[in-house]
Image (cartoon, rainbow, N blue to C red; front, side, top):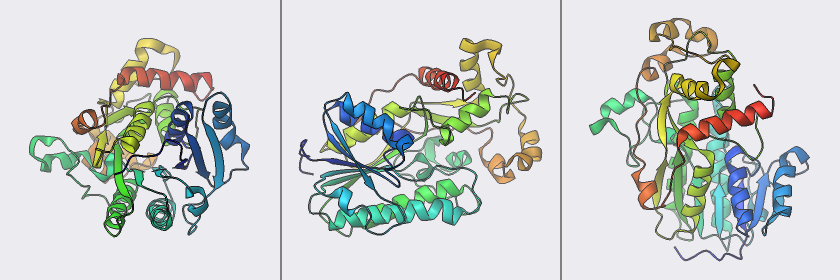
Length: 349
């Protein structure tokens, strides 16, 4: 890849999102011009935080109306951009229609953005926000891998539209991106595969699945016992750094697992208990797997999901991100505490 001209604007899709907000903030503070693409730039609640950051930084931000499901809606915002960060994709665990709510926005959205890159005279590199969910579907899948640790060579083989639909959508979207990059030679593709992203947002987001998970840990939802899930975790600021390093590093190629550590939900609760003690309804024990399997459907947990994920560790290899992107990870304990504290300050718990 030829080097990116620092004077050219940089496109960030889904710019008002949890992760994208941090990418935009860091780019603005480094003096770049950001082309921020969202569905409704007239919505002040979506733009005011980044506008304020732009006013106090050396960078500039321009807002563009774009929609994942509208053909060619990224052409205007991509004009003059050499680097594109495509972060926009729904992260929702509970949906009524997985095809409409997850798969179509993920796959068709990726196709639309990349077709715009094909039509662009300026784009040199696209950095795609995928997920470790495209690497592994269920934690039980690790039993099929030599050494029991997933890396960038592995692909999710166990998810489908009826089981782990979010993971399925991320897998299909990333495969579509790799298919499309092979059909042209104008731009290259670098993929970021983060684990579950936690940490404070540039503004607290009640709609983010990450905030919903932390809320359920602290608001009493799990006070009778933490679900026996092991989660691979990473700080949102580290994921933003990974994107920017991947965008500007000519040596960056292929996929990059971004993960700091893994913790069970009970371990997350114990980390929070160190600071908050009995101020919140934090779970103090783990729910037995057989109980979760039995009552899970009452709380929206499918039994197959419980069977294939509860009690299994989520282990991934992050060495490529350290060696190639020179990423330095924050301690996940700090991430968890800062995330929870922001939610307290915003009265979300």
